[in-house]
Image (cartoon, rainbow, N blue to C red):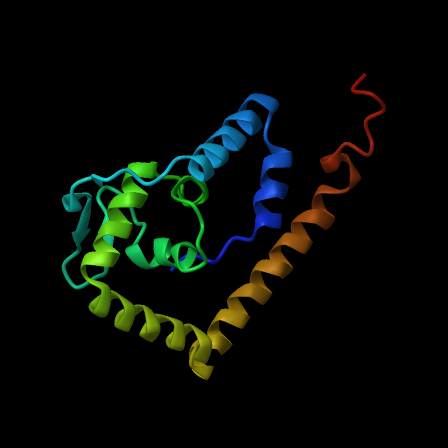
Length: 159
């Protein structure tokens, strides 16, 4: 399941984009706010049920539960599409799947939220913490080894 993205996070992302990409993002978001959802949605086969898995947008790892994170917060389809990196039609197909399988999807979504709220079992969390600590130590050692020249501090103007 994706981590819910806030408007502030989208704004920060947009500020890092070059102007043409920033303009395209704004146009996509505005289009999603202005356009009504068409009467005919894309066919439901855009969403497929993976064997022993969750329903996903075909050809991606995006589940209908990733879409649901934003859909339940009343995000427009275009904004969801931008955040998840899929087309508006794919988001609309996922929403159609959600609506057509409302009870099943909502029940499984609630289980996912409850599992996420419980967090990892202590033995798994301990292993993850150890992995993160090793990663931090390696990054710190690399930073010390590379010295100030690695970030351009020792180079006066590139000459």
